[in-house]
Length: 498
Ligand code: MN
Image (tube, rainbow, N blue to C red; front, side, top):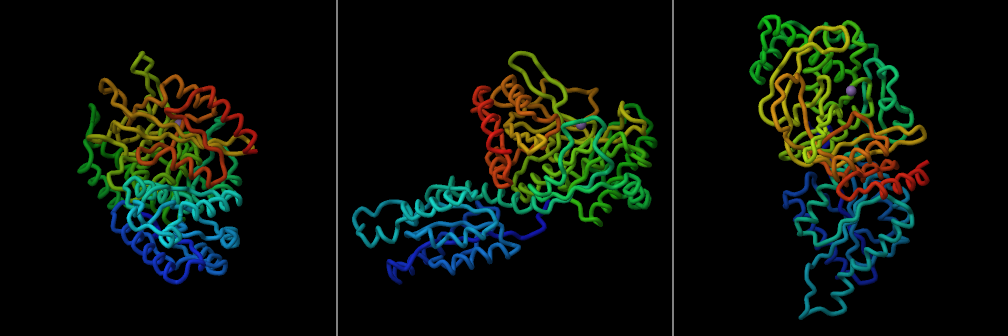
């Protein structure tokens, strides 16, 4: 998917007048070189824009004010080349409302042993200038990222790039709009939540529509448009008839094509970025949206099943954060379905009734048409595939009644040992870190859901930083997790976040 805005990041260098014009000239030159080289590196997903050196209260305040107002500015990167007395920054920092990165770097990589004198030392003193600045940001309690190292170091550039995607998540979260088609599944607890609080915390607008309103949009899609999309499906995917009549199969597939077009038009017309459905409330729709939802997810729409609007928003958020990423491996809603408990081969088979995003697929994608075994509709057509190997993160945003918590579990995705020819749904298979038993125990103790927003393309650190920016608790389950530490973290969280 593509972002709706062409975001940029501002590069602001802190200094002061104490060291004279010659020094300030060098500061500006060095900053210009750093910005130029960062942009040339090819490592950063977004452009960095150089701003004039920040010296006085007035300039600092005005610059942060302008950053707030500029819709294309997704964040500010600050570095203090020389000492920059931090009281000068208070007004600006008080007003600033966007993501902040403190790049703790230095223009020269090595101490110039043969030539170094006090002029050089005064000009290149981020080692203490940045400490002065960091102190103020900490004292003011402002959330920010600190990246340390030489600006040409690939690892440093990777960290800046990673933070930029977090920053996009923070910026874009504030206007995610989720369309609820019908209500949450009756009696289910974990898919529920406080929608007003979600808007206050994350900026999400979550609106319900009667299912037949969107079903009318589906019915309005012409036969010609529907058939053209069916042709596209038949070109792109393998058709697994499994003994069904080819004409009857095609008619079932056409129902999903019509749903895809109708849903997408309805979402576009009303400007929504994510959608939830509920298999128990389908109105006049002939099939549970399966293939249709899978394709919409691949286009970047968030999705949550059984009315799970939190997962729908999270899936879209993670697709936004990974937009335009080279070699992205995919992002999807998934559900913990069934276990393999054989010692040494433990893992969780991930799937859903139908709705798994093909962006995570590995190898061929097929269309199958099978009974749903739930509800009272036609056998829905769906895309079936297995998923990629590699590390990913499974996230679960839960509502604890008085606050939200984000669980982030790093998981190792694997191939299942054997094909599963009778399973008519797309799957993934993973072992949660640090190991199956500890990972599952930690997930259940922390109250994690059975639905997750999963991606191969973001890190636990990125999602944890996003949660921090939203002012909610993040609980990590990864290689460092022990149950004793996790329980202490949950206890601390219950005191801090209430
Ligand atoms: Mn489900």
